[in-house]
Structures are given as structure tokens and as C-alpha cells.
Length: 173
Image 1 (cartoon, rainbow, N blue to C red):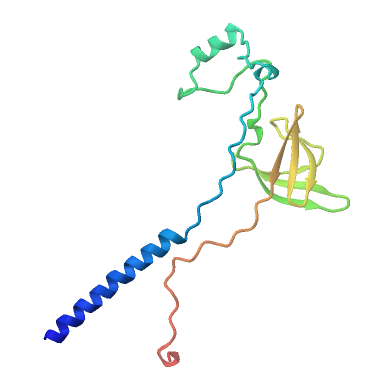
Image 2 (cartoon, rainbow, N blue to C red):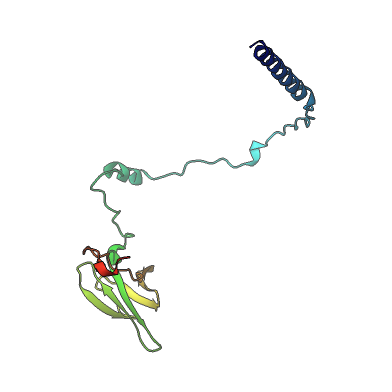
């Protein structure tokens, strides 16, 4: 029992000496860094930069913002002489493209569900003109605006909801 107590004291003393030696090595072995001199501060010439001001907006345009708040539920796009109908192709889906050396036509499904076929150079009832036909889509134009419809890639059918087929009892391993 005395030998065990003596060995414990010896090991504890060795641990304390080892910890003190490690602390001394770490404290005396790190070199003092050589710092670079502080950079000289340069004065920035603010006179060379142009002063930015707020744009001058006529009061009539500001009045429209008060009359029609941005976050109103019944807000609609601005109407006026510069406003154009860009919703003509909303909901129209390109379902097919036929492009050969002599034929350029596309198949469309309208938002009403009606299916139509258009040749290049013809237009929809909304006024959008079929300008060009590519293998993956078609380009329409209306009053200088262009919009492109892309052909949707084919999709796999939905997984079956039927019960999984089962192997006959004699084929099971």
C-alpha cells in the first residue's frame, strides 16, 4: 500500500514537472514578430468626385404612387399610351414543332384548352406573330417585343397506383 502511494506521488510530481517544462518551452520559443511599419495615411480628394443628387420627379408622377399603393391587392399594371399587352402568350403551351426544308409549323394549346396549328408568318388572335420556328421552340413578336416559347421535354408517365406484381410461390428463392 505504501509503495502504491509513493508511486502515485512520484507520477504526480513528474506530470507537474512535465507541464512546467512544456509551458516554459512555449513561452520562450515563440519569436517576437517583426511588424511592418504603419502605412502612411493619404488624404482623399473629395473635390474630384461629382456630387450625386436625387432625380427630379414631376409631382404628377408622385401623385400616382399615392393613389395606387404598391402593396394593394387590386393593383394592376400601369395603363396609358406606352402600355402594351404582354399577357397575350401567358398560358399558351407549345406542344409540337414540325420543321423541314419546306415546312415550318408549330402546335399550340391555348389557355382555353383549344389546340391550334400555326405556320411561320401567321399570327394568333391576340396579335402575336410567329416570327421563327426552331427545333426546340418558337419566337413570337408584337409591336417590337419578342417572346420565345420553348418546347417542353417529354415526361415519364406517373407511377402506377396498382398493387405490385407478385412472383408465384414456386419461383421464390
